[in-house]
Image (cartoon, rainbow, N blue to C red; front, side):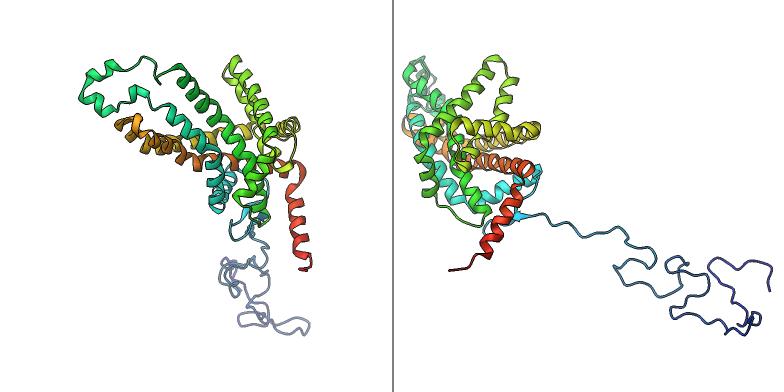
Length: 363
């Protein structure tokens, strides 16, 4: 027998085999196992080349689970119309993706609801601006600069018109319309999660029946924000974040103004910074979309002259808002659902409710 050890991975046959000695004690000669494994070779620990390879995708014998696991399926809501909606603690991507899915699935309802609330304001505001630059178009002023000397120093013709435009644009459109749209679309979101549909008439009817309470809630929320504006810029973000879920709480839980504000503050308290950041991001997205698409109609209106082209100005304000206002409302509603899922197990409640509906006899 050689005095040198066998090379790595080679096994010297025991006695009784060619090149080996005689078996001891009448033992049977050594034979390779069914998998070609010899003495000293354990499954998974031998060198390459011994034994048949494991099937593709299965763990090697002796090594156990290689660490690859199937992806965990998170609970979802909705149906084929909406696609899977997040019914678990949501990330930023879940909220944005869910908002676009809900907007796509309920586009007709969202457009009709927003138009019903905002269209009268846009028409009135555009009409009040018809005397801007004396009703002259920019093209006329460029051709004859002397016309600009005849323009009234009051931008909109009178201080009454100026005050009306500022009130509509800065208070009603920027604050009241998103709040009312949020109150109206919040029940639509809940219905979509349950696989149901709500018409625009039904959604508007729910809000109109409680419109005085909705206006009180809107006034209370934004009076607190006004206090923040008077103090400085940063504190206004605090009440804005704490009360951003007031509209969904008002629309879904049918709470009163003060209770809805308290409900919103309680849900936001443990997730103040994520709620603030996502709300600001949604506002920035809406602002850039409004600015980009609004000029498609507003620029021709100003070139022609608002005295005759003021309807184009109204369209330039309304059409982008038909998408951005519902988007902001849907993001706020998803933030509301996310907070309730994290704090109250709303996902389990909705899943159980869905199972009960499926198990209910169809008669």
